[in-house]
Each structure stands twice: as structure tokens, then as C-alpha cells.
Image 1 (tube, rainbow, N blue to C red):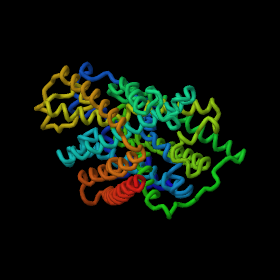
Image 2 (image 1 turned 30 degrees about the vertical axis):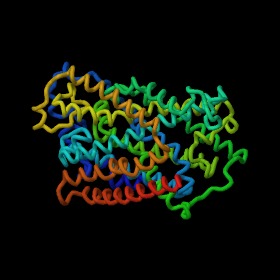
Image 3 (image 1 turned 135 degrees about the vertical axis):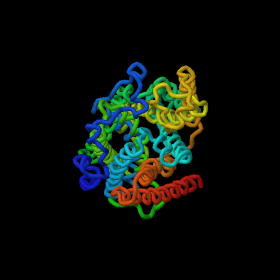
Image 4 (image 1 turned 90 degrees about the vertical axis):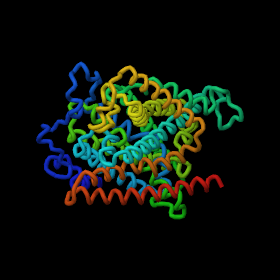
Length: 482
């Protein structure tokens, strides 16, 4: 695997203590970083929130929960456009880049003295940085939540359609109200609504485990069907090894699918703080394992979906029918993926919720009682905040309710899910993964630092990918509509 070279040169766990680029003053911290910064560490134990901590397995499942989303459905399409060889290389490179950017972002935490994405942005670029990060976080994660509800509606239509013939929306002009797409999207939003009030990743460990089990089932069915096809010679007539150069717009648009597929940086610090005895070295090791598992999963599902259905594999949920799988596996596939989508929603909702909550608290000059979600003001501004736990709780509840309402509304009126995937990946996810971490590092370090060359390279790469992805996805939308 190519990531070994990257690991040795850039993110090797063995070099965290010796390489100045990723050294995090661990000598002074005894290889363990405090959960809270100095302003919060002064709180008495009774004043601190009683949040559960995540074990190594819990942190790994939370990272997988964020890294493997509904974009796994797009991997067969990526393979169909880029070819088996080209698609595999793109997926591997995506994992390598995330394995570089995540430790880089982790390093900025120590350099800035902040432990969340937004405070780091404010520390580096003041209010302008906060605005750009907030917009990107909200755009990226709200887009993901919309996609989850949209695909949930599709899986539920498949399940209901098996038992109720009128619910097969694609074949029925007027399906029953319960089976209509917008009804099922609203239903999905209402089901996950209670879980979006949970404050800490440590408290949703059970959700992450459920999601991991669900995606294992989905991937297992996909790979199993592929193996069955090899044995019984049931597969696509033609498989490409190389990209479709005669379809440049669609092929280049796939780049954004890879970018958004691995994007967990928006939840990185929340997951880090949920660790039991958090340390940079342990966290980066977990990130590397997450990238390896995600990479193998994407390649396996992408190849198997493409091998089985060829160019008709743009949406596996539509490709797998009762005829291909049989009733048992068909129901298991759709039920497990429905559960997978619902358990993915809360973790994606956390970032825009926390961002909006922090902004509203700041506007009303109210301090977050625990400063676990809204520590977004620098030291000199904290003195102007008022201690009002009751008001803060009301603001928090209103933020959660309003945020879910907005996501459900957008999901009901949303256009093609693939359009959302592409544009969000090209703009917001690209900025969160490449541009902002590299810009933070450049701002926080001086000339001569080894990481600055890498940061400049990541910014150049991110700008190039962002322009290509945005232009090709816009062109793709216009071509499809015309």
C-alpha cells in the first residue's frame, strides 16, 4: 500500500516524538493531553459535565462513523468513470491525503492553544476565519444530513414496496401517502431527532457500533453477491481499467466523491476530546487505522458494485433487487443500510449544531456552562460572557430543534442527491480537508518549519481540486437538465 511511504515520511507514529513537524511537546504532557484547556481545567469536578469517555475501540468506531458515510454508495460509480485501476489509485490517494491533513490539523491545536476547529480559526484569522469555517462546516454537514434522509427514503421505499405493491414509487404514479418520498424523509428526520440532543461523542458510542455493524452487513452482501457472480458468471459485460477519457466532465466530477468520502475533520476534535486519556500519538494511530479500513471498504464495495452491474452501478440501492438477491438478502440489505443512514445522521449534525449554538451564545453574551461545545471566544472576550446555564440550555434546545427542522425542510425540497454530493465536496469539504488546516499551520509557524512546504502544497492542491470539482459538477448539472 502506498500509504507506507507517506507514513514513514510524514505521519509515522514512531516519529511523533522525534520529528519537529508532528512533535506536540509531548515531553511536557507525558504523552497525554488534557481534555480541556487551561481555562477549563480550573473548574472543580462538580462543575464539569459528566460525559462518558470512549475507549480505543469507541474512538475508532466514531472515526469510522464519520469517515464512511453514504458516499460508499458512490464508489461503484467512481470505478465506472475512473476505471478499476484509476478508481483504486484515487481512493488510495484520498486516504493518504487525509492521513497527512489530520495530523497537520491536530498539530495546529497545540500551536494555537485551542481545542476546536472554530477557536483555531478565530485565533489565526479572527472573525473572518470564523465566518469561513462556520459556513463550510454548516454547508458540508447539512449537505450530508440531507443525503442521509434522501437515501433513507429510498431504502424505506424498497422495504415497503416489497410488502405493499402500491409503495413501489418508481412504478406507481400515485403511491400512498406513507410511501411518498417526502413523507419518508420527514419520518427519518423525526426518528433521529432525539439523538441530536446528545452533546458528547462519548455518549453515542452505541450508535457508532450499530453503524459499523450495519455497514459490515451492507458491504458483506455487496461483496458476497460479487463472489457469487464470479462463480456463476453473472456480472457486467464490460469492465474498464482506465478512466473514460471520452466523458471528461463525469470523470473529473468523481474527484469530489473521493474528497467527501473520507471527510471526518469536522468532527476530529470532538472525537479526540471524547477519548479516555486523550493523546495525539494514540489519536493519529487511530486515524491511520480508520483510513486503512475505509480505503479497503471503498475499494472492495466500489469494485464489486462495478463488477456486478457495470455502468448501471451509480446507485447500489437501485441496482440490488429481489430478483438478484432473493427476499431475505434484499430485506437485510435495505434494513441494514436504513439503520446505517440513521446512525450516520447525528454525528454529521453535531458540527453545524455546535457552530450555530456557539454563534447564538456569543450574540447574546451567554457562556456555555461546560464550554465543551461553544468555547469559540478567545481569552480576552470570555470576560464579557454571562453565566446563565438556564438560558444557555434554552438556546441549545432551540438550536437543535431549528437545525433539524431546517435539514428536514431542505431534504424535502432537495434536488438530485448526486448534485449535493458533488458541489458540497468541491467547495466545503475540500476547504475543510485541505485548505483550512494548511492555512492554520502557515499562520501559526515561522519560516524554516518543515511543515510549511507541505502546507503550501496542500493549499495549491486544494485550490486545483476545488476549481476542477466545482466547474465539472456545475457543467454536469446543466448537461443533465438539458
